Each structure stands twice: as C-alpha cells, then as structure tokens.
Length: 223
Image (tube, rainbow, N blue to C red; front, side):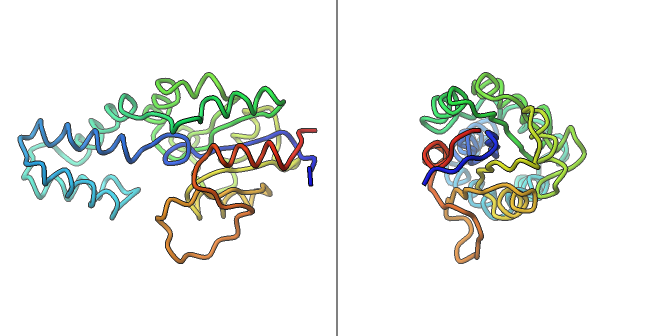
C-alpha cells in the first residue's frame, strides 16, 4: 500500500549515514602508533569506546589514566574531534540514496547530537552537505535528541513542520526512535546489534540506511 505523507525524511548521522566505528578504528590505530603503544592497545581502545559510548569524556578519562598522559581530558577530546571528520566515510550507497530521495520530491535533513564543528566537518567532508536540505546539530542549538526541539529545528531548516508528519531514521532507540515518535514522525530503526533484547516501537527495523531509504520511497508518496 502506498501512503501519502509530508515529504520530510530526517536522518541521524553517526552510525546511521556515516561509519563512525570504522573511523574510530582508524583513529585508534593512529593514536596507538603516535604513542608507541602495542597493537593490542587498539583492541582495548575499541572495547572501551563500545563500553562507554557516547560518553567520550569518560573514554578519555580512562585513556589518560591508563597511559599516564600529560594532556587533559578536554585536550584529548578536542584533538579527537578535530581529527574525526577526516576519517569518517558514508556507508556504501548512502549519498546516491539520499540524492535519489530528493529527486523524488523529498525534503531530506539530518538531526544529530554532537559538537557543531565536529558534526559539520563530517557533513562537509563526506559530501552529505551536498545532498540534504538542512541539518540541526545539538551543539549549536542548545537542545539534544530525544527532545522535541531539535527535530523541530531540523524540520524547519528543510522547509517543513512536524505537524505534517514524515520519517526519522536512526540507530539509537531513545534519541532517534523514541524522540521521533514523540515528535509525531514515523520511524525506521537501524539495528546494529547494540541494543540486544531492548523493546522498540519503530515502524520498521533494518540493517542499514539504504534499506531505510528504499522503504520510504516504496511505502510512501510525497504529497
């Protein structure tokens, strides 16, 4: 069945459109080489990141203590944020999929938590900035997902409002799915195995953003 909805499709950024895990492994490898750490430390860094994500402040507090680093947690975090935009890449098919969605008349936006410079750098260097209509970054707006305000800002930047409905695609059951449902959006959850056994109320469950884009294009028609 084809449904008619407002042509608004919002997407999370990290682990939804861009492969943050692969980028982090590149960063961890560089970090270990620069600090002359053994290769086994890359695995430790990756395990710690999975354990404390998304609290990078906690991550660097433990890293600083383990290696007796002179830099502060804030300095280590800032250096990582500066480097990360150069290391991230979109998942395969994402750029083409978003471009095709826009060509079908959809307004496409990104709504993401994080520091403005870090997230904007990712948008620009991956090419995502060229295939979307607007974005909202929590670090610039003073409000974060799952709060309603960030979804409202993203919709407005895309020339739409939440009153007409639309879609949200993301990997976080609370920030993305719960937040978007509260905002009146239909939801597609990208299940990357990080929420084992958690109950969800997403409209669809997929394994990547390209599959989510296909569902939006197939199941709905922009009015």
